[in-house]
Image: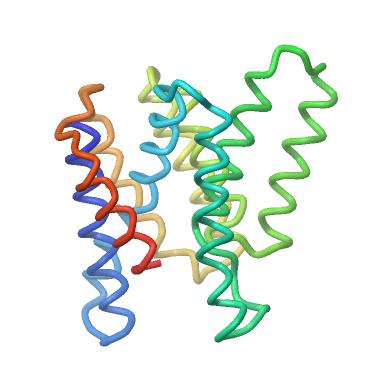
Length: 204
């Protein structure tokens, strides 16, 4: 399964989930929606791994996060959660810190600890759970069993901390799709990519 196919599945799942919240409906749509974020977490790491300019990749995601948040602050409330692109950008930053060979271990530890705590304190969408998911998928992409157990672990921890998070356990089913990834990009078209991005921004 290509990254394009995974992206389409994630977008469909996300759309059904969000429309279900707005219109009200079946719990099954909410469950289906749990597939979206883990797939996006996996794909953001793959994008980072294959990009030629990692700095620009991070800055692009961060730019989207700020751009999307401005209308939320203007028309809703400054107390709203920060959008998912902040989570994705933080996950990328976390990975870049881990891969920086110029930093000592203590500095790395303090920086990633700050990112994890900050993602909760500033109310990023999915918070530390989201950031850690990105790191797990990226760091252990060749070790499927380890991904399964670590992803299961953070889900259990968050369910224990907040029972509202219980439905997120169904996100484990996304692993069946992610593990089918063949390392190929699939359909590559700049226009389609732009449409996908605009649509994702609109939905979020």
